[in-house]
Image (cartoon, rainbow, N blue to C red):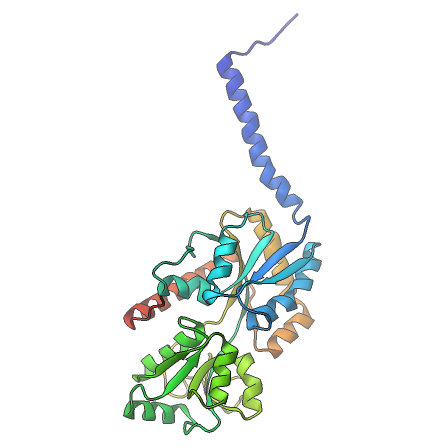
Length: 331
């Protein structure tokens, strides 16, 4: 009778090979079965915010594409840091995702000295989602009806004109600082806890100005509660055809990025990333979803996870330099 005898070393090598093959097969098996239970989509903003509106428009269509429900959870706080930290510590299995904005991925790392997450290392980019333009507005009783009027007044009285923001380091803060820097003027920053209270302060006349997401400001513009001075975009807004862009008003600064992207914890399987990316692209390509997003001035972004990471890196470099030059810091 023929028998095969293996030495101890060979048995150990064979066992290691079997274990390695099993380990390599496990992620593939998980990816093939993904998803088999609900996916949690975390929003670092409160209910009713721009990001919250976006994910609630997308969640049902994403769920249909994936064959599993997508549950939206709001975790606001600390300019998105609460939600970012939570997702960074979650298992990288694709079941906990985050709608991250340019503030969390590109601005915060340059603004905070002791940020509890690393935007470069702690996350897997999944898909771009939307971008949105901004608009500079003044109160209806303000003496400033055009951007040149505002600039002239600010040059005559540095730091006398106030502007509101949704918080220090927020896009609404940095965008106005960019305008001031490009115009060579000094404005006084008044931070609020959220874009709603900030815009209300401009409407009520407690603060002179604000740079707001266009979709949020548009109803107040149409109601005559605030006056639009300039659009921070490459082209004019179709609902505001008489409002110039910053460049048309003579201020040569780049448009303010207002993108949102889907990310997950670092180390996600790329097959799972591919499925999720396809679901996002299907959602924003849906005619009904596309129309609702555009009605709110959210522009769907189509592309890969790698393309989104490249854009985030470019914004981090530009805004990192701007933040450093202007000495902007958040404690």
